[in-house]
Amino acid sequence: MGHVEWTTIAGLDEVPAAGAVVHADRLWQGPAGGGAVAAVQLAELTGGCTFFTALGDDHAGRRSRAELEHRGVRVRAAPRPGPTRTAVSVVDRGGERTTITLGERLQPAAADPLDWAELASFDAVFFTAGDADLLREARRAGTLVVTAREFTTVLESGVRVDALVGSSCDPAEHCNPALLRTLPGLVVSTEGRHGGVFTTCGQAPRRYRPARAPGPLVDTYGVGDNFAAVLTYALAAGSTTADALDLAAKHGAACTTRRGPFAARPAPARRAARV
Image (spheres, rainbow, N blue to C red):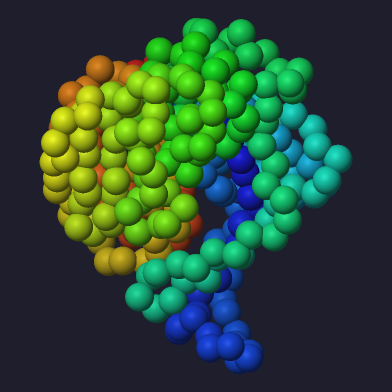
């Protein structure tokens, strides 16, 4: 549940200095952003995923829907009069990415005429964008995981969150779970190649180990979104916290070895699930 951006990933030797003019090679193009990346990963894991989002009536919106549906995602999109947001992500020779978004982020809302009652039949929801009322609707699912970027929405909604996940390297994902009415069952703060830190039910923080990448570093775009999606899947499937973090770390590490956030071909479905 969340947003999509039609994204172009371009490669260059290094991020240019102010005033410079450089050439970049297009490495990948497709629907991305936290919601779209997570939806594709969940579809690969389970054989299908419903993605509640919002799209503009433009070429980027139509192409995003087509690409996502081709990858097994059932798109439920509220229409918006403005253009679908686009993004450009430049990747330097070290594999690090810098992303620039263009346009307003389009996100679903509880007032949109979509079948929110359907959420009661879902094993899990991963929430990347939306309003507080929509997050309350998402709580109908068996497991609710929310990106730390939406901490303010969690705070406003007052709902109990099963897991809150974010990156310690991203200032926009820093939050204080102690401000919430009810502490999340799990809070995860990722640290890239160093693994990360997690707490369960407000207990003392512990570390989890990073996974070894199955190849050389190519691109870091979408690593965190893939990690969060796999964590959502594993928790909904009944995995222990340790096993869920281990599986999420492996998929995150695998993402660094390819161009773009998606696998070349869908992975075999493991368990039929409603996500």
